[in-house]
Image 1 (cartoon, rainbow, N blue to C red):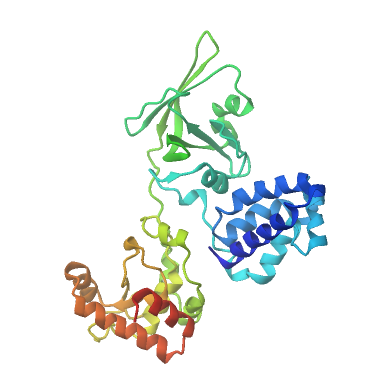
Image 2 (tube, one colour; image 1 turned 45 degrees about the vertical axis):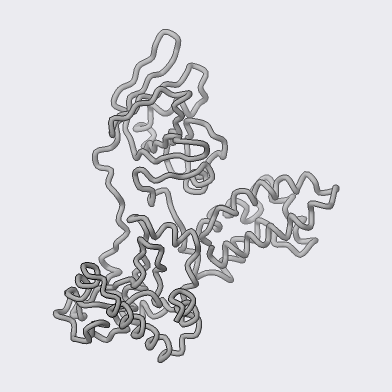
Length: 361
């Protein structure tokens, strides 16, 4: 969990401890706990910031009630965004988005709410105005559902609310349709972005909709070519990254994980154009004239390794292939010695501590 997100969570835990024994504020305690149930699942400062934006400037209908926090030395909801801007500015871009979802990702109701916003209730059709998205959260018990990798049949009755009636006009609204299927209690598999290919209305007023997974939906890769060639000045603050959270390590096991390009760039600049394993100069230069080396994680991301400079080395393409093909123990030891020397020479105490904790050296 980012430091900013951790601060907000601690702030609410403090509020709960103050108000839970105070009958005068019992009504407020219920609202505090509702917030707490959500934010304890938010691991990134950027997502926490987005969540509390609606309270800034006192515009939210409950903002006035939360001002009572001031009397007890607790930060009120409307002040949280400003506090995060002033104290955790470097973490504000740490966030996950619904655009990071990959087909077959499994999420919870809380995850869906954090990613999309809207109502926390489990309605099967949700209209998310802010993101111009319709969500279909399907349950085999209530919706006729079949799947041949692309097709969904979805039924809803005549008494459905406005969101249902708007669904078939999604193109008119310029909305997208994202579909989740319930696989077990509070577990939903992402089916992907879909389009309506057929719609009919029976004599009972029940709408029958056939949806097809979008043909152009592809797994999103977060690689930004412009970031691959960061200068040393642009990447040198990579050593300031905090120890990765449990959620970040969990995400790193997915191919969809957004790697920090500063870590990669810093690692390559740190090597000064020489492979960290064989010691030879980079075999050629990239299109910007920089020595071509590849960033390698000593403990693979797929195995839960952190995307941090104390777990990365710069390798020539030949050594990089060799490491993955052979996995020589002596090569790994050589790389650990190299990284440890980098950290000791730069007097980087924090990352050296993380290194020793990770590798026990």
